[in-house]
Image (cartoon, rainbow, N blue to C red; front, top):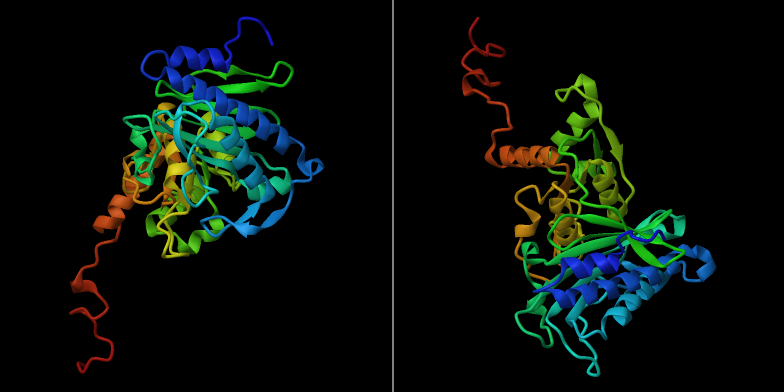
Length: 359
């Protein structure tokens, strides 16, 4: 480590002085959990923790061993400090109650301990996503305390475990990236005030689901794929990693749009990604970096949660592209995207003479 460089600890203490001074200590505990998870993930098959368990989480997804271990790491690192009223995790059916021997605070920590864990066995970048909310008073949290719209988050971030480990964070004053210096064990500010380019020529979506998409998404993707020969007049590149952390990180670094839209594959699920654990924290990070985040029909951060594990459609990234897809949804919902058909010239029009009785 070079002396004089800004560490994560120094940054969060400076940024949270005053009203949220206790949150700085919580963020430092989260960073300690991230270091533990980074070490677990970095060992790969050598750790003995690869592979799936016989259990499933509340969403019915098969849990990886690393899902359980990383969830435990966050609980153990963050439960004792006295800042939290409770925690909620994608891997747990119900919120986690702070053990009786520890003091309670007024903050709520919500997290996906290992996003993209299905990729861990093939050595693709995975990550941890987290969000911080607060109660009005300290004490044990109830489920209703967690059901706050995303625009009430006071901090959000993710860690990405790739060639280097990075922690990307916002406390409401921009989006900033810290890289783990493995020699000193410190996170160092390496990407201050990240900005998402407003324009992009890159999109990320799972195109195998195209037949299930709504028409506005099909319209947008078809225009991108048409490239220079289509109405956009430029070529686009398509990306798909199937790890939200990796997709969002690429967008923060160089722009793009990430889409996990509403589809008809499972009508019981209006979207695929979890509002509290994935969509809200990523939306806050993207907006703080000058991008946009939408369900296609409204701002993600404005969605009022009704359930702890609620899912939503997600479109986020470069502002102009997100706004374009939103406009396509508006045009579809209003019917203005459909060509006008006059009854006068329809198949059974006044001028049709085939099979008529007139000679």
